[in-house]
Image (cartoon, rainbow, N blue to C red):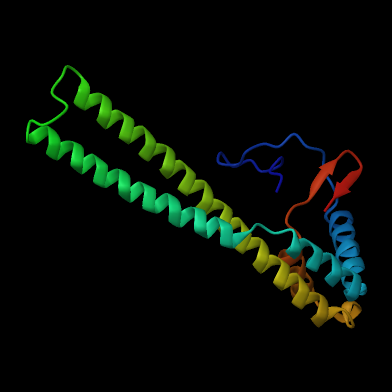
Length: 173
Protein backbone atom coordinates (compact mmCIF):
# COMPACT_ATOMS: atom_id res chain seq x y z
CA UNK A 1 0.00 0.00 0.00
CA UNK A 2 1.19 3.48 -0.78
CA UNK A 3 1.61 5.73 2.24
CA UNK A 4 2.18 8.95 0.30
CA UNK A 5 -0.41 10.88 2.30
CA UNK A 6 0.29 9.21 5.65
CA UNK A 7 2.03 11.73 7.92
CA UNK A 8 3.04 9.22 10.59
CA UNK A 9 6.76 8.98 11.23
CA UNK A 10 6.72 5.22 10.68
CA UNK A 11 5.16 5.54 7.22
CA UNK A 12 7.52 5.05 4.29
CA UNK A 13 6.81 7.53 1.50
CA UNK A 14 6.07 6.13 -1.93
CA UNK A 15 6.83 7.91 -5.19
CA UNK A 16 4.63 5.74 -7.42
CA UNK A 17 1.67 7.27 -9.18
CA UNK A 18 -1.75 6.69 -7.67
CA UNK A 19 -4.05 4.06 -9.14
CA UNK A 20 -7.73 3.96 -8.39
CA UNK A 21 -8.63 0.99 -6.21
CA UNK A 22 -11.76 0.48 -8.28
CA UNK A 23 -9.70 0.26 -11.49
CA UNK A 24 -7.19 -2.13 -9.97
CA UNK A 25 -9.83 -4.30 -8.28
CA UNK A 26 -11.87 -4.38 -11.48
CA UNK A 27 -8.87 -5.46 -13.56
CA UNK A 28 -7.86 -8.16 -11.07
CA UNK A 29 -11.41 -9.51 -10.73
CA UNK A 30 -11.95 -9.50 -14.52
CA UNK A 31 -8.80 -11.55 -15.05
CA UNK A 32 -9.66 -13.97 -12.26
CA UNK A 33 -13.29 -14.35 -13.49
CA UNK A 34 -12.00 -15.01 -17.00
CA UNK A 35 -9.86 -17.85 -15.66
CA UNK A 36 -12.67 -19.30 -13.60
CA UNK A 37 -15.38 -18.87 -16.25
CA UNK A 38 -14.06 -21.78 -18.26
CA UNK A 39 -12.86 -24.25 -15.65
CA UNK A 40 -11.80 -26.89 -18.17
CA UNK A 41 -9.22 -24.59 -19.77
CA UNK A 42 -8.13 -23.29 -16.37
CA UNK A 43 -7.80 -26.77 -14.88
CA UNK A 44 -5.84 -27.88 -17.94
CA UNK A 45 -3.41 -24.99 -17.37
CA UNK A 46 -3.07 -25.96 -13.71
CA UNK A 47 -2.38 -29.58 -14.61
CA UNK A 48 0.28 -28.46 -17.10
CA UNK A 49 1.91 -26.45 -14.29
CA UNK A 50 1.75 -29.46 -11.98
CA UNK A 51 3.58 -31.53 -14.60
CA UNK A 52 6.38 -28.94 -14.69
CA UNK A 53 6.94 -29.14 -10.96
CA UNK A 54 10.22 -29.99 -9.30
CA UNK A 55 11.17 -33.65 -8.99
CA UNK A 56 10.53 -33.96 -5.25
CA UNK A 57 11.67 -37.58 -5.09
CA UNK A 58 15.07 -36.68 -6.52
CA UNK A 59 15.41 -33.76 -4.12
CA UNK A 60 14.58 -36.06 -1.18
CA UNK A 61 17.19 -38.58 -2.38
CA UNK A 62 19.79 -35.80 -2.76
CA UNK A 63 18.93 -34.57 0.72
CA UNK A 64 19.43 -38.04 2.25
CA UNK A 65 22.73 -38.52 0.38
CA UNK A 66 24.06 -35.17 1.57
CA UNK A 67 22.96 -35.87 5.15
CA UNK A 68 24.83 -39.21 5.04
CA UNK A 69 27.89 -37.46 3.63
CA UNK A 70 27.68 -34.84 6.38
CA UNK A 71 27.47 -37.56 9.05
CA UNK A 72 30.46 -39.29 7.47
CA UNK A 73 32.44 -36.05 7.62
CA UNK A 74 31.61 -35.72 11.33
CA UNK A 75 32.95 -39.22 11.87
CA UNK A 76 36.05 -38.35 9.81
CA UNK A 77 36.63 -35.31 12.02
CA UNK A 78 36.35 -37.52 15.11
CA UNK A 79 38.89 -39.93 13.56
CA UNK A 80 41.30 -37.05 12.90
CA UNK A 81 41.04 -36.05 16.58
CA UNK A 82 41.68 -39.63 17.73
CA UNK A 83 44.73 -40.01 15.46
CA UNK A 84 46.12 -36.70 16.73
CA UNK A 85 45.53 -37.58 20.40
CA UNK A 86 47.22 -40.97 19.97
CA UNK A 87 50.15 -39.16 18.29
CA UNK A 88 49.73 -41.33 15.18
CA UNK A 89 49.16 -38.56 12.64
CA UNK A 90 48.87 -34.76 12.10
CA UNK A 91 51.85 -33.68 14.20
CA UNK A 92 53.67 -31.69 11.55
CA UNK A 93 53.35 -27.90 11.53
CA UNK A 94 49.79 -26.99 10.53
CA UNK A 95 48.81 -30.54 9.47
CA UNK A 96 45.96 -30.84 11.97
CA UNK A 97 44.63 -27.36 11.17
CA UNK A 98 44.72 -28.02 7.42
CA UNK A 99 42.82 -31.28 7.74
CA UNK A 100 40.22 -29.82 10.10
CA UNK A 101 39.79 -26.82 7.78
CA UNK A 102 39.38 -29.11 4.76
CA UNK A 103 36.66 -31.13 6.49
CA UNK A 104 34.97 -27.98 7.82
CA UNK A 105 34.89 -26.42 4.33
CA UNK A 106 33.22 -29.52 2.91
CA UNK A 107 30.71 -29.49 5.80
CA UNK A 108 29.87 -25.84 5.11
CA UNK A 109 29.38 -26.59 1.42
CA UNK A 110 27.12 -29.56 2.20
CA UNK A 111 25.07 -27.51 4.67
CA UNK A 112 24.58 -24.81 2.02
CA UNK A 113 23.45 -27.46 -0.47
CA UNK A 114 21.06 -28.94 2.12
CA UNK A 115 19.59 -25.49 2.76
CA UNK A 116 19.05 -25.02 -0.98
CA UNK A 117 17.32 -28.39 -1.27
CA UNK A 118 15.11 -27.61 1.74
CA UNK A 119 14.08 -24.29 0.14
CA UNK A 120 13.29 -26.02 -3.16
CA UNK A 121 11.17 -28.61 -1.35
CA UNK A 122 9.26 -25.87 0.49
CA UNK A 123 8.68 -23.95 -2.75
CA UNK A 124 7.51 -27.12 -4.51
CA UNK A 125 5.08 -27.89 -1.69
CA UNK A 126 3.78 -24.30 -1.64
CA UNK A 127 3.26 -24.37 -5.41
CA UNK A 128 1.51 -27.73 -5.19
CA UNK A 129 -0.85 -26.42 -2.51
CA UNK A 130 -1.56 -23.22 -4.47
CA UNK A 131 -2.36 -25.20 -7.63
CA UNK A 132 -4.62 -27.60 -5.74
CA UNK A 133 -6.43 -24.66 -4.16
CA UNK A 134 -6.85 -22.96 -7.54
CA UNK A 135 -8.19 -26.16 -9.06
CA UNK A 136 -10.74 -26.55 -6.26
CA UNK A 137 -11.78 -22.91 -6.54
CA UNK A 138 -12.28 -23.23 -10.28
CA UNK A 139 -14.57 -26.20 -9.80
CA UNK A 140 -16.44 -24.65 -6.89
CA UNK A 141 -17.14 -21.15 -8.23
CA UNK A 142 -17.20 -21.45 -12.01
CA UNK A 143 -21.00 -21.48 -12.21
CA UNK A 144 -21.75 -18.69 -9.74
CA UNK A 145 -19.13 -15.97 -10.32
CA UNK A 146 -21.67 -13.17 -10.66
CA UNK A 147 -23.37 -13.92 -7.33
CA UNK A 148 -20.26 -13.86 -5.10
CA UNK A 149 -19.92 -11.43 -2.19
CA UNK A 150 -16.84 -9.30 -1.52
CA UNK A 151 -15.29 -11.68 1.06
CA UNK A 152 -15.60 -14.68 -1.27
CA UNK A 153 -14.04 -12.71 -4.14
CA UNK A 154 -11.27 -11.62 -1.79
CA UNK A 155 -10.60 -15.23 -0.77
CA UNK A 156 -10.48 -16.35 -4.40
CA UNK A 157 -8.09 -13.56 -5.36
CA UNK A 158 -5.89 -14.26 -2.32
CA UNK A 159 -5.63 -17.93 -3.34
CA UNK A 160 -5.02 -17.32 -7.04
CA UNK A 161 -3.05 -14.08 -7.37
CA UNK A 162 0.59 -14.29 -6.39
CA UNK A 163 1.50 -10.72 -7.36
CA UNK A 164 0.31 -7.65 -9.21
CA UNK A 165 2.82 -5.57 -11.16
CA UNK A 166 2.09 -2.11 -12.50
CA UNK A 167 4.17 -0.45 -15.19
CA UNK A 168 2.73 2.81 -16.48
CA UNK A 169 -0.72 1.94 -17.82
CA UNK A 170 -0.07 -1.82 -17.87
CA UNK A 171 -1.19 -4.09 -15.05
CA UNK A 172 0.09 -7.69 -14.89
CA UNK A 173 -1.51 -10.23 -12.63
